[in-house]
Image (cartoon, rainbow, N blue to C red; front, side):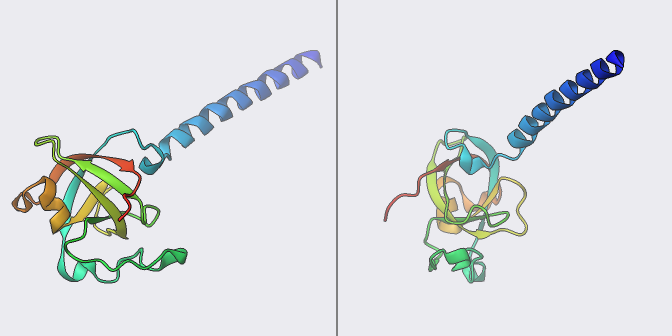
Length: 145
């Protein structure tokens, strides 16, 4: 009986330690880039214009205020809706140019950490003829108007 109790206690201790390690790994893998404002994230940018600006997914959603987008706005789209109304500072590592954009839409065709910008925002840091550009971004506080 003592042997059984010993192995049961050992098994339970191992289970608790393993569960704690798995919880930390799960948490680390599920961190949103917006939760880590100091961290630069490698990504790609593209741009959108025209009717793609109409009826952005963040407009009036979950009590968020409506936002009348124009092609001259410094705005962007990312996958999912959890980034609505958050801001990014995007840097082109080749020319060191930067732009701050507000995420106001979801991008159905974007991959993880890809940002789809208005042509105006894209043009601030890259040539639109390039189409897709490697960048770094980090979450920042949105500037006041």
